[in-house]
Length: 226
Image (cartoon, rainbow, N blue to C red):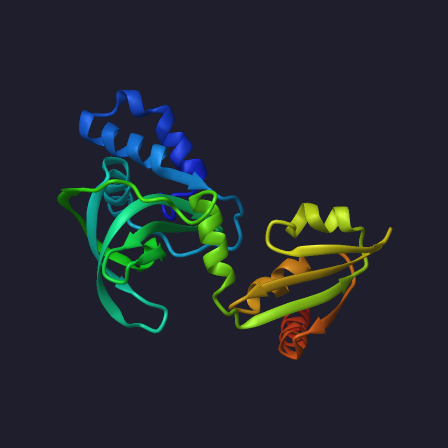
């Protein structure tokens, strides 16, 4: 159950009919209020299933929601929102909601959200400023500055590279046997592993820190062989 991936939600849905009424209501709400946005990516910290179901029920019932939220810089705030949808993206869960204190739409990472509870007050749904909740989250994440912007040339066909890491990278075909790979990450571990899984030679163009990390990993692997 850790992380409650989209596949876990589908599996739970299959057994919903034999669940007690209370659990059945929670799972049905989670299934109905979750919008999968694709992408797996590296594993992320797990989330509390109780938090997910509480938020899903508030989304479904159109009920004001209060919770505590920890920002990326560690600041803690109390939030009062009109919940809209849950989005499953890249092994993380997000709540798309209208923030009643700041008066604008926001996406909240579920793993940073604690003690959610409904207030009992209902609301009339607002128009989301996006085609759907998944698009809203993708756009919001695109505005967050990333620490590393990775670019590499790979000696492999673009179709092969896309099949392996295309969900997490942009792959540009250069010719029949070569392509350019771009990705963003807040850690160099994932780009290093992604490039290593391609089973092809590659040349890192940016950033220089990635070259140093690959060198260190290579030396460590060589020592392990010895």
